[in-house]
Amino acid sequence: MRKKIIAGNWKMNLTLDEGQKLTSEIVNMYKDEKISDVVVVLNPPFPHIFPVKKLIGDTPGISVGAQNCSDKDSGAYTGEVSAKIIASFEAEYVIIGHSERREYFKEDNELLSVKVKKALESGLTPIFCCGESLEIREAGTHEPNVKFQLTDSLFDLSAEDIQKVVIAYEPIWAIGTGKTATADQAQEMHFALRRHLGAKYGKDVAAEISILYGGSMKPDNAVELLSKPDVDGGLIGGASLKSRDFIDIVKSY
Ligand SMILES: O=C(CO)COP(=O)(O)O
Image (cartoon, rainbow, N blue to C red; front, side, top):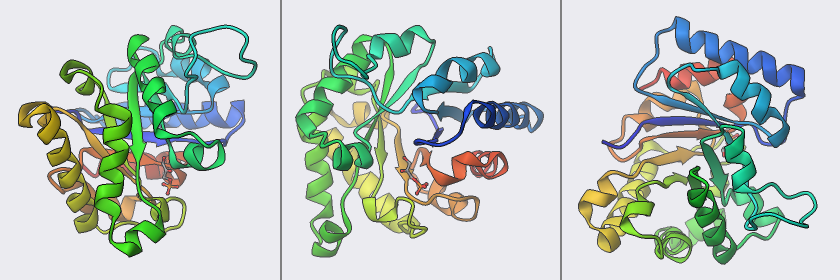
C-alpha cells in the first residue's frame, strides 16, 4: 500500500526561533488531534534539521527532510551538503529537483538523476519534483513534457529502487501563485504519470509509488485534490508555514 504523505517545504524561510515554534505547534496538534495514517514530513532549511528532529522526537508519523542534497559524496565542495550528512541527522526524506532549483540553480535531469541515487544510497527517500511551465501547459504538451522528466531522471533505477521514490507533481504555474490546478487536472496528470511508471516497471510497482500534488494547496482546496484516486498527498509551500493551515491540510484526508 502506498503511503499518504503531506510534506511541508519551508523553502528559505524562518529563523531558528520561528522554526522551533512552528514545529512544536505542528507536533502538538498532530498528537492532540489524533492524526494517524498520514505521514507528515517537515522540510526546513538545512540548519533547522537537527532542532526540528529533536522536537519531533519519537513521535510516530512525523519525519524531517531536506530540500536538496549534493550530487557529490564528500570533499572540497564548499557550501554543499551530502545525502550522507543529511541522513546522519536522522532525516528521512530529501526534496530533489524542485522547479526553483531547476530554474535558479540550473539543475538538469542528468544532475537530478545522480542526486536521486545519492539519496537512495544514503537511505533517504527522494521526493522527486516534476512539473510544466505555463507556456508548456498552454501549448498542450504538458503530459509528454512531465513524463520525460521522469524518464530522463528516474528510469535507470531498478524496480526495487523506484518504489522508494516519492514523486511530487508541481505545475510551475501553480507554485506560489494562488492559482491551483483543478482536482481534475491534477488527477489527469497523476494518472498519466502512474501509467507511465507502469509501462516501464509494471502496474504493481507503479501502484506502490506515492504521487503528491504541489502548487497553492491550501485548507480550502485540499479536500477536493486529496479525494482523487491518484493524488497521494501534497507538497505544501506557503501553507506549511502556518501550523493551523498545515494541520488542516493533513486532516483533509
Ligand atoms: O513549491 C511548492 C512546494 O514545494 C508549492 O508552493 P506553494 O504551496 O506556496 O504554492
